[in-house]
Length: 222
Image (cartoon, rainbow, N blue to C red; front, top):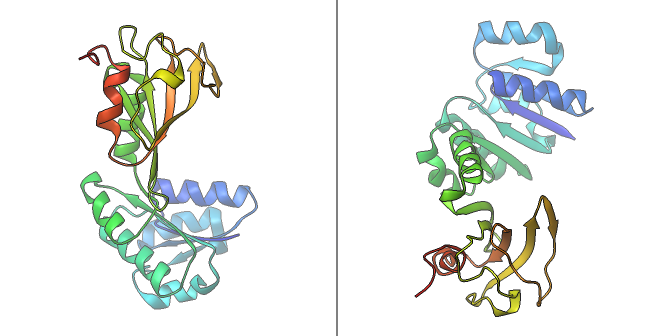
């Protein structure tokens, strides 16, 4: 696989190093001259100096044959532009963009730049996962398939606690696909009884979270 990494900060440099250690062909592009000279001491010919928002720099790096372009600069506009050019002009199949300001995440999505990764957003997801009071955790959004996968912890006093899977009142377009209990996960059957403290994974159509969550929380009755 040939990978072009845009941005030689800590993320880009470490990413390039790890990919090379895995045997991938990598070119790292860095526009700061001093930073480039430092990285060159380690990566040698695998790093190039230049502004990746300029087409000739991308072409010099061989973007026409790239299997994957990863834009991880500290500038969201640059990351957005590089990924858009890679996707639309050079028809790169796979692109990944770093989003520095989570408020810009929607702009990346509107331009079809997926996946767009926000470190802030990922850390918030981890916080939600570690703190049960947040309740629902978005694990995965399958944009093209129009599906979502979420995780919910079953509260002891919830409507779902003590019920069989087939008896839990879930809206059409949602399905329990896994139960984690005592550190072990399993695929439930229709007659599997859900217990308080279980963590359940559900696949669902987007927008159904508000209808589903009350079944698994203590105030879900009524």
